[in-house]
Image 1 (spheres, rainbow, N blue to C red):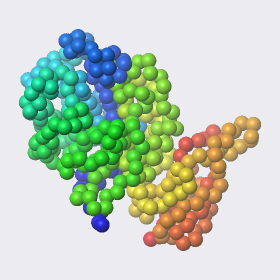
Image 2: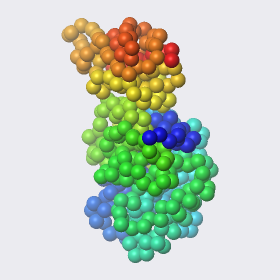
Image 3: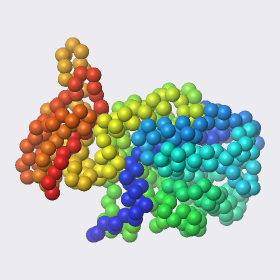
Image 4: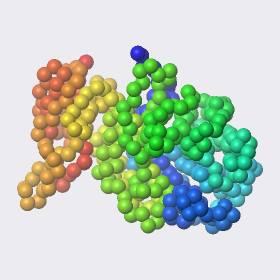
Length: 412
């Protein structure tokens, strides 16, 4: 069966490759994660007092956008409204539970979009569909859905062109009619090129939904290859992932994933053609914690060493041993090699795996040359039909990239 051709917006989204997710709201002031209201069963009238102390005194939209740029992210998805029901944007009279009616006194989404546009990052909007604030969510669901559509229409009509909308919460009422067609019609009216995502949650990773959706999601789980044969529409894939155990800020959560883990996860996503959406949780004042910023900048360093194949490259059917894989972009192949060792005296090096011959099967075309992207060292190789073997030299002392990339030029 045929694989459908992706629409232009979907093809462009796949080339973004890597994005920054931001969970930030009233809950960030408590420093115990984004579900704190639900987890501790805090009464609404008590929880809503957090609006009175929401100052965003250290929120710097330009610094956030510049940090994403330095990390190599091509887009940012920010929580315009999370499950708590508080909006970072001006709700234009739908209610007063928003940033302009807090001590901030400003539309923070306007600042975010302007900063993204200034530095060349594509802004996406997360918007909850589950709402702990609005009583209509439980008492008059159809009226609530109209409120949801009205909120989304503001986001789609007041901020210029955006990259897409990222919804989350339909899993909370699996037997309800969410009137998705009407919601997506609002988006297409104002933002015909926007990517539409609706998160299927932890228990339904990779599942398709409404035909208007453009990407499936893999929350907190490495994506599997998409089988697009027979699909009526080509859908992209995206994995969203936390740096620690919370989406929102966890003041006492210091159990961060290592930079090596995050790099390998980015590679695992791109191996199957999925985007990697990596989350940060700013503090209650809106500042990126230093550890989170450092990890992001570390990913950016790795991307600068390994090249643009992480964006442009596509899965091409080439297989390597273990975690090793290849991506194709134009007349080039990029081979992602894991677990190389460092060369040097045994007294000062720690073995991290094997250098030496690496074998890849399914290589089509004649390989002309192979080099490491981080140093331009030419690598010796042999090719027997579609089987390629090259000598993966170890890192020089003082260098380790977790995953090293060898770029090959081919005659097709």
